[in-house]
Image (cartoon, one colour):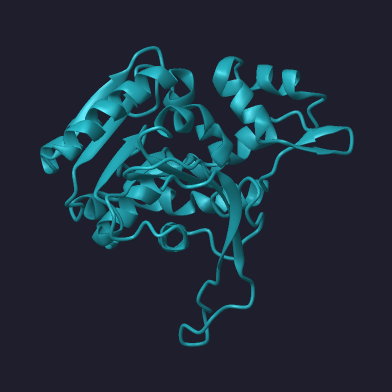
Length: 284
């Protein structure tokens, strides 16, 4: 039976730091969107400071053939804004919690992640291969370290002219087009206009690990097939994608024409085409 579309909240309790792993005091709420559909599940993970709504156009294309779930990462969108832990480990726990909530574990689930969401998908597949059958990584990989990244993210968020007077102004600030509209849709009404749903310092803390290390060790533990989608004008370097394939031959690489880092928004149709072809091949 086809799943009904709707939204729900999944609650995750982080382990305490000083109590031998007992439950911490502040549960994290994860806002989830079930796009319905019937077929092999897709679990969609957005990038830093994004929100699950940015997957709407892609989800609509897949809802006829796949069960599609997306959720706001901790610290983003309608999920808990200031969680106590934003390192990579709790992000991986969150994926597992959402998969359990929707009964995806043990099925033919494909994790689809863009940017930081792609890194979370990669780390989940490396540590918990039972969670997914395959990965789709959009402008995401294991490269690093990136010492300047926290400062760059802080400067970027500081540059936002908050509050934005309206969605049109916000969309223009974020570059216009589908990507600009998607970023504007992630803002919330507040005094004087539209405000971010993310906290600057939380976002900076979220990328601290990336400043100091790479994740090639995790990549080497990934055993499932992988599709890497790189924007033609994106931030992912071609040599990173090639190195990923060299170390894990069950990796397919495709370049999305005209797309930047938000390839799933800049050229949704091309991303859909590459993914649909890949997913059909997985079923054979």
